[in-house]
Length: 466
Ligand SMILES: [Zn+2]
Image (cartoon, rainbow, N blue to C red; front, top):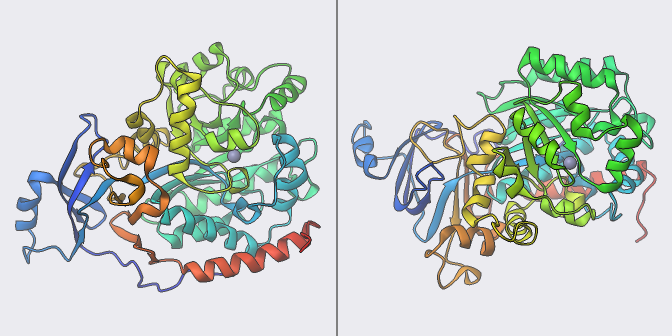
């Protein structure tokens, strides 16, 4: 199984000074200032005016390390609210333009063909792409089998994550290899919780991940409600993504998914659902009343022809919300900048009177995204005491010039690219810096993924003609 390199790589430094960057703190005051920031161990020790005093308290009076952030934006690490690391391996292999065909003909057969080795390679590839693109925290749906492998990859990678084992105990077109009994599905999910929840010094949390309404029985939803309440676990699922899916849900449960969840008492502050494209007003009100969470997945919604979610309508009701790419076969990239750019532009069509501002879009990937995952007290802003999940993004590229600093929010959302990321830090540990990774070897990750993808395609009977 592929593994991380260099256990000493990315070792925690006691103090790091991030100097002369333009900080976008994403705090309530909307602080933007060209100042220094000091990291001590896994936390932000001081910002701006308070940095000199904090430095003076250090035994040597100097930081162990300085990162020059001049000409760059410094902001809270990007948070990816919905992703499937297990699907990175299927990038380019699932090009159907409709959700249910895409799932039944490609995604589920491929997921059923995963081994521990292919799943590890897929997760490492996804993590490497995300970290290089400034992502410091993800919410991953997992897959049915071998989810502990994803936990091991996340643990070794240094990334912060909520992840869960996908639950599927029924469904048209679900391969036998992905179907489990209700009891087995719940028991194996709880085993993942027992092993990883709160692990890696608190970097890892485990969710329950009932895939979507069409793959889960009434009994499974009841068990999900019970276990999530008992263990205080996020319930991560898909909701109201596609019109055809909505018709199938109506045929299956004689209601919409949201009303079904409301009637079964599944909605609540731990409920985190991706997509929400086709929600009606009363459903949005139900979600808001329950303090539930919606995650915007604009590129996936476009590529699978699902539609355009109205995030302004979510925010008007006070819903917590985030943004994510969904799986790589439906975008075909794990690129938060791409998602933010699309989210901003879609909003101008679906909410022309009051579209999302660039700052609001960036909030989806930072402070709002943190609140969506119940992590708002730990990450999502640059404030003393918060975990040092920080990204440094170059602001001197040609495609950002000449007015990059005039409106950093606009530059980041509409002009910047994942390749502009200079540094990605999680809990004070640099995971990526100027093309180099400290916990993963990108060349090895790519080679492992290519080898495992060939083997997986053969197992799934989907060998591509060359
Ligand atoms: Zn998804």
